[in-house]
Amino acid sequence: MPRSVVRAGAPRCHFCRLPPRWCICDSIPTVETGLHIDVLIHRAEQWKPSSTGKLVERTVQGARCHVFNCELDRRGDERLAATIPRDGRELWILHPLGEPIPDRRTAGEKPAGQVLLLDASWRQAGEMLRAVNGLGKRVCLPAMGPSRYWLRHHPKETHLSTAEALLGIFGSLGDATAAARFRLHFELHVYATLLSRGRRQLAEAYLESSPLQAALPEVLARLEGKRSGG
Image (cartoon, rainbow, N blue to C red; front, side, top):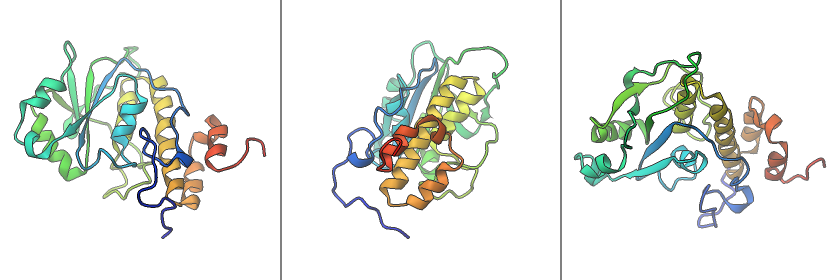
C-alpha cells in the first residue's frame, strides 16, 4: 500500500487540514441554504483531516460544530441542550433508527428547520444519540447508493459519511442548488485527501465518476501540479 507523501508534523492548513500543496480552501463558493445545520462531532474526530463533519462546518453558511465531550455529555450534560437547539426551529436528529424524512422534492417547499448530524464511528454515534435524546425528533434517510467516501473502510457500502448524509437531506428536502454545490465540496475533499496520501491511482479512479472534471478543471489541474491548458 502506498505510504502518505506527507511527513508527520508537516504544516497543514488550519481550515481544510490538508498540507498547503493540496489546500482546497476558496476553491468553491460556500453553500447557501435555509436549513440550519449543526454537527455534533466526537472528540476523536475533530482534528482528523478526513473528517466530513468539519467539512460541513467550513463549507455551509451558518453551520455550527459542537465537540462531544465523552466524560460529560454521555451523562446528559445540560451543555448540549443549551447550545444545540435554535429558537423557533424544529430540530431533526439524523440517525438510522429515526422516522423517514418527508420527501418534499415535488412539494415546492423551501428547506427550513434545523438538522443535527452526528459525526463519529457507528459505536460512538450510539453513545452520542443517547446524550441528545429528547432534544428533537429522530429522522432517517431513504436508501441511497454506495458511499463515495473513499477515505475510510465502511462495514457496509451503503454506510454513509456525515457529508453524504447531509447530501441526502438536501435531496429529500428538494434543495437541489445546495446539494449540487455541497457535492462538489465533498468530492473535492475526498480527491485532494487521496492525493495527499499518495494514492494517485485511486484518486484518478475516483474522478472517473465525479462531477469535478466538468465543474472544476482548473482546480484539478492545480492539485495535479499541471498548468491549465498545458
